[in-house]
Length: 350
Image 1 (tube, rainbow, N blue to C red):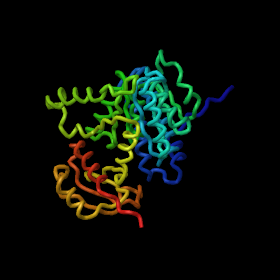
Image 2: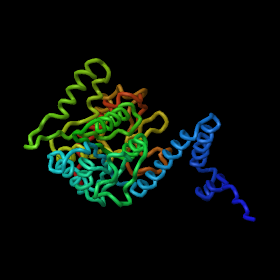
Image 3: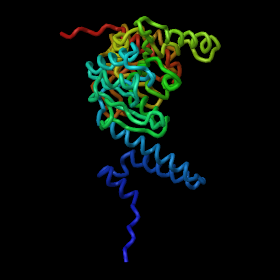
């Protein structure tokens, strides 16, 4: 008689994964809470379809995190645009050139896995410097021939997990003309940055070109709609217009992205304080001017330039910090603060 297989012990598996750190590791509690949430769905009467959705979403996130964790420390740009753009179109050439130049600066590109702008976003930087985040659709049955078969290609069932991975792993977003999907991705990006639910990053809109190479004003027309209908009616704030930039050429898009990281490096919250990491410290006179100009961003006190906080657990410990009690709003103004930081000339290297 065949003996039944013993039931797996989740606690033992978790202990094995964490090693000696065990229950002292904060990840222990995080995993326990995740398991409790999934089990809670069953207790709450969740049906099989709901449970399969959660299981699939978690599996998609796990596989994608596992992939991107291998490339920590490498800057990445997400490239959005129409899957219907033909390879002979100027927009395709512009996306390919943008990806190529970004790769020459050590960046990697994240796009969907289809044709059009997505394929151009792979073709420019090459397969080696590209990630493909595909979506299973009846009319896009196969990934493009550049990323197909690559270890950095992941196929998603759900748009929401795919978009989460695009934005959580990106240090910049470049958007070329496109349809509903492109605008969905653009507005999702703007909404998350505007509300502080995503880290702040450069969002560049690369102007569309006609077949003769002249600008057709695609993004300028879009901007006029945003200004005339959204801003004029008070549905967005004036500062929100600073969250994106319209550029005319691939090189201008590259320059805008690289400029964002000229002195600014990254940021995170430590309790109520926003910690902005700098590639080079600010001269005291410039720090004082910034403190005065951007006072509305401070919930209390002022801005301090200092070394890393202990709560940062050694993350980029060598970098100087700007630390202030942030209001957690007006992220368009925060974007302008970062621009002002980057405007300060870097001291020449002796």
